Image (cartoon, rainbow, N blue to C red; front, side, top):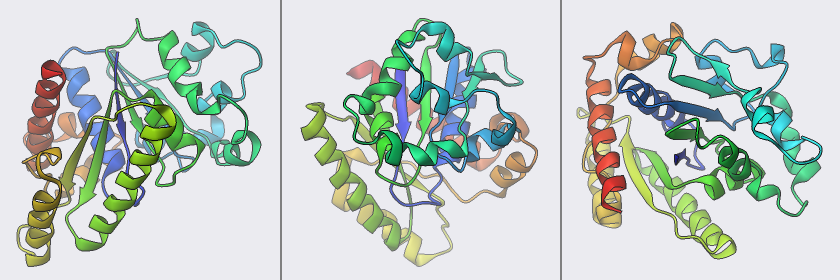
Length: 259
C-alpha cells in the first residue's frame, strides 16, 4: 500500500482539497483508497458529511486502543462514501488531547503506521490529511508515509511556512532514520497577481526538482464541491482545478513507478 501524507505547518494552503481530490481521482480509476483525517478540526471528515460529534468510533479509538491492535479494530473505524472503493478514517475533537495524554509514551509515533500495516491488503492507497502542527499526529502521519506531498500556496508568507516544514522533515529523518520522498505542490495560484507569479518562480528556483512543475489554480469549483459534500472530480470533472490535480496524479504515479 502506498501512503501519501499531505502536510504543511501552515494552514489554509489546500491540504484537505489535495487529499480529497487525489483520493477521488484514484478511486474513480479503480484503486481502493482510504483517506485518513488526523486533524482534530475534522475538515476532511466533514467534507464527506461525517459529523465527528456523532461517531461511535474514529481514529482516536485506534490511538487509545488497549492491548494489541488487530485488523478488525481498524476496519471498524472506517466510514464508507458514495464510491464503493473510497473509505474514510475520520477524526474527532478528542484527537486534540493526544499530545497531552500520549505524547511522551514510547512508540506512540508509530501507531498509525502499525494500524495501516494491518489493512494494507485491503487498500492500494492511503492518503493522510494532516493538522498544521508538528505534534504526535503529524509525526504519526509522516512516520507512516511512503511519500510526503507538501501543498504550498503561491504567496511569500507560505514560502516561509515551507521552510519550517522542511526543517521538521529533516528532524524527523534523523529521529526515524528514514529518508522522506517529498513533492512540493504549488497551490491556489492566481495568474492575475504578480506576487503569485513571483512566489512560484522563487519556489522553483529555491527547491528545484522537488517542486512539481505544474500549478493548482484558484478554482471556485472546489468550494462548490465542498458545499455539496461531493468529490471535485465528480462534481466538476472538467474544472481547471480538477484537470490540474489529474496532471499531478499522473506525475506522482510516474515518481512511484520510477523509484
